[in-house]
Length: 311
Image 1 (spheres, rainbow, N blue to C red):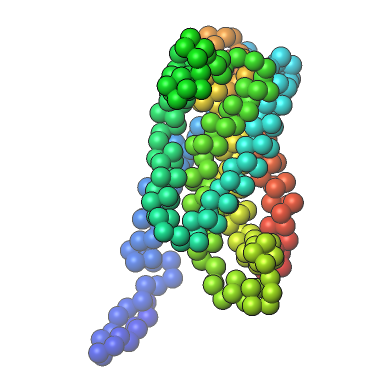
Image 2 (image 1 turned 45 degrees about the vertical axis):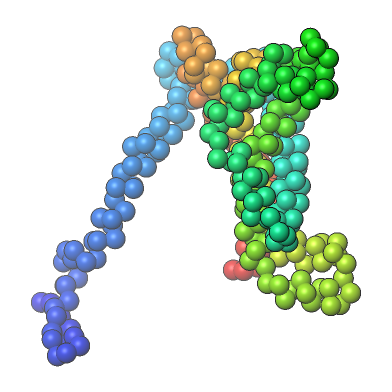
């Protein structure tokens, strides 16, 4: 039988017996059920199919040959090298510039709000719009050469060929374009961390004779370290996944990176007999690279040690 429970005002309610269905107890599960169903059909199912596809031969059956073909792909190691260069220099450049901008805006100088609004404009543009803007600007007859001519930096008929030259030069061009797009989002995360710092901590540093550099290095940076870790890890993962701007500026194969290889085997050569297996295997490789890079960064920055101490 149900147990009687006394209510305020003298009423009596019956608690459900053990094992008896209760709409009240089931309500949280019913509310999250659509989200679980969505993830099962539109996230978990494609992921499982992709993993199975990467270990399945064209003729059927289990195989590891797909990963061997990826490693033998002539563009695989250049793609690894180019992705590494982009990640290292892009993340470092974006963090330094974004942190300096966040420190500057956090000083709340006159016009800081207007400066923040202007600095955030690149973040509001869709990735395709950014790629199209730089594609039309960096060609020999693009708006950048026209702008330089009207500003007097170029003679009539003189052109700068931005999209030619060595792979290294083109990689740094990609890093510059990516930094222009992404620095605002990194800056916003860091600025949020800086604005949550208690002013008393910084004032105490200056009271005890600390310079701006000492206060920054010994008080501000350690206190915003969790925010810095969040900003850098998000940027690290996104930098590994850069491909659209490269394809828009240089096309496929000229400057290969890891994710561009997935798109290449999915969209450019879908009729190849093993294109699906190659794309699936590249996807698994990229997932492993992203996971290893994220874990290595968190290990180096001490995030795991901090969690262990908190426990």
